[in-house]
Amino acid sequence: MIRKKLVEQIQAKKSYLCVGLDTDISKIPLHLQSHPDAIFEFNKAIIDATKDLCVSYKINTAFYEAMGLKGWEAMEKTVAYIPTEHLKIADAKRGDIGNTSDQYARAFFETIPFDAITVAPYMGEDSIRPFLEYKDKWTIVLGLTSNKGANDFELQKILSADNNQSDFLYEKVLKTVAGWGSINNLMFVTGATQAAAFANIRHLIPEHFLLVPGVGAQGGSLKEVSQYGLNKEVGLLINASRAIIYASTKEDFAAAARNIAQEYQTEMASYLG
Image (cartoon, helix red, strand yellow):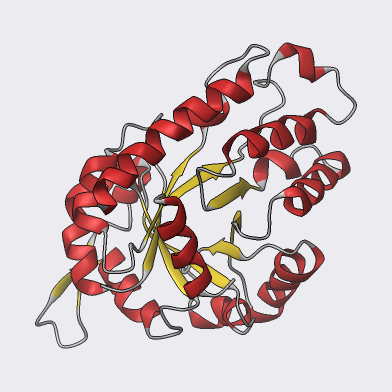
């Protein structure tokens, strides 16, 4: 999916909502758990209930990989069911030596036709380059994450080569990786619980899209993220997973999911003007 199409969807729907399909079979409504295709049936209902309110769906592949072949089949069917107008994100956090990343890219851009994939930058450019080689696909690089462990590395200070400047490691990642691609094929993950850093992040990468987890169940503020993170083409994809898909554990789960997604969309519309 090209950037222009994504921006047009955001403007048309007045929404920059990404619904996370982190579907855990133990948490879906009981009446579905015995269904032979429970995960897909649940996802299908969530998609039908929210597709006019969001511009993207993010599938955390761990929840599907843990189920083996059945999980992979559910993931493939879910990706095929998501409308083509939506950005389809594989939250897989891959990143390995070049030839291995090449196979990961084939898996998530060809075998299962996602539009984007999350990757870890720790191993450097050659571990990310195979993803960037795909036309009209997005590589979403971990920047500043919302977990407590971000303090272990991402928020540690490092000296520049001339020892004249001290940056956080995440700042080094953003500035370096931004030069490997463009605003048309690179996004960065920035956790909503790190809202205080958004102004600085926008200074470093003013035009890139940011995928922002952590709003909702993790306590991130949509208002603060929007205040400091929006740019001239919106530039944000706010992911909400548990707050939406598990809004109810009863037979009204899809309607409840829609209600929460509608709340997000309405608030987003107010920030877009």
